[in-house]
Image: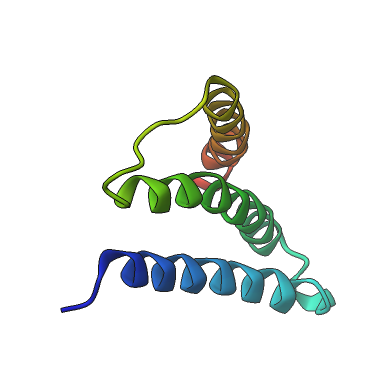
Length: 97
């Protein structure tokens, strides 16, 4: 069976590449400058940031001997988690239609 690190890494890479693809597909085409595509591309960037904030610590927590996080590391991760989570929540009511 596959180890969890490989599974989570592949999921993370697919998520980042998918969001980058959305940004790169919407940016150069002027026909896609509609509110729906604007919000899609604006939600892709915080999603990439949100993923890159939480996934590295998850990789560390998967390793059995190391489950300790420093105070500064915890504060940094929670701050970034709140900022990028707030960015996604800010756009959610606008997209509900």
